[in-house]
Length: 210
Image (tube, rainbow, N blue to C red; front, side, top):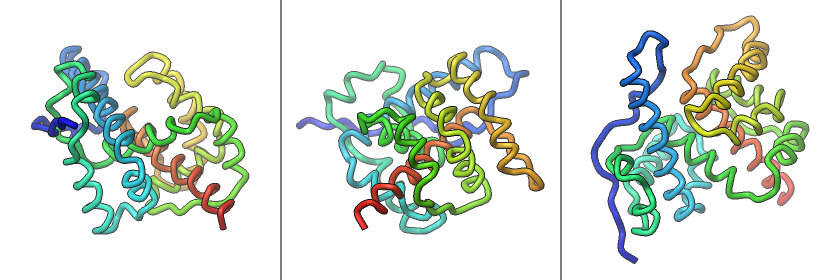
């Protein structure tokens, strides 16, 4: 099958969107976020085994970084590539946005309602965490699975996403009570929650197969 290769622009530096930014820049961020979603959908759908293996690794490790870099350079089918708007087709993927997008797509691939899966996982086997923010995200996913499930139903950069994140923030604050409060951009927070939620769901399957 004919393939198309990832190209040039940079996404890894998108970490926050200030209220003071000009509308033009905010629109650009929205397009970049949509491009991440488009690319990660293609890559996860066409490489599910590799993506699944990656998402359960310690993201601090050299192995994780190597596999993430390899996935970011994956060719995708011409069918998936051509389905993207042209403005999404030139982007370099990496870091938390890329990993979070892969996680979210892998979560979506399971057809059982996410609310059911996350609610059961919240009282099930524990999953590994690898940093302070990761532990907070895992705590949030287990503490408010219904809110996290709602978040993943929203479109990126939408009013619905903003509302869902506002509802999640108090739970995140409880999960970091007594420590440093986490203030993350919508992109970063959604990515953190996606990565943690994927590992939490994967831990339940692993525990059931043991």
